[in-house]
Image 1 (spheres, protein in one colour):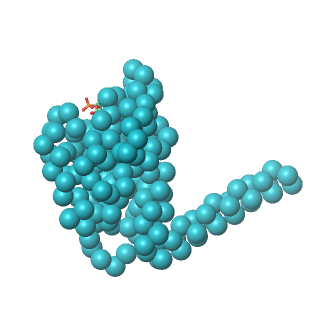
Image 2 (cartoon, protein in one colour; image 1 turned 45 degrees about the vertical axis):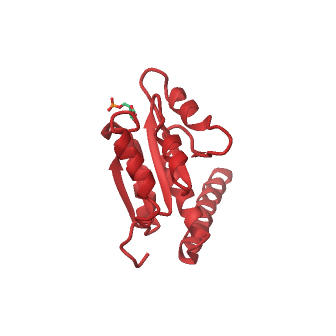
Image 3 (tube, rainbow, N blue to C red; image 1 turned 135 degrees about the horizontal axis):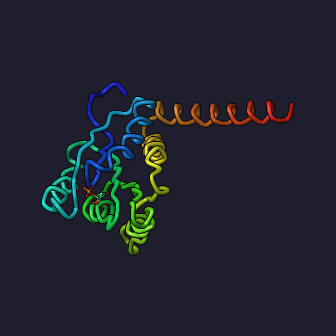
Length: 164
Ligand code: RP5
């Protein structure tokens, strides 16, 4: 994208989530989508979380990707405050394998959706953000089409090799 303005905000509950969440950033970079990334904890920095969600739209963000583990309230609380679409990434925990994170993020009450991806699948969060932005930006939509074509070609090439 030509503008320097971040369209996607990537937030996470702790720096310990970064190893997972950077996969979302990588995908956005592949699609040339500007993003910003920071730590916002629903529990340790509730006011910061509130301010981030409250001002995300006026800052020019169009999609938020929020990752958290354990009692993963960040994506849902942010979704409660902002009108922007929120994609939730359940980060795997050492004690409950991420099921706790998944259930915390996916079980939102009616009226406050969070688009939840698979446990640790921040790459899919990046892709979904690209697809959402593709509704408005044809250049991103075309890049998503190309990505899908390449994926198909890759699988078909592998299938051909296997069948040979
Ligand atoms: C959550 O608690 C974070 O999202 C992280 O996944 C988890 C553990 O955080 P740390 O204790 O590693 O900072 O809020």
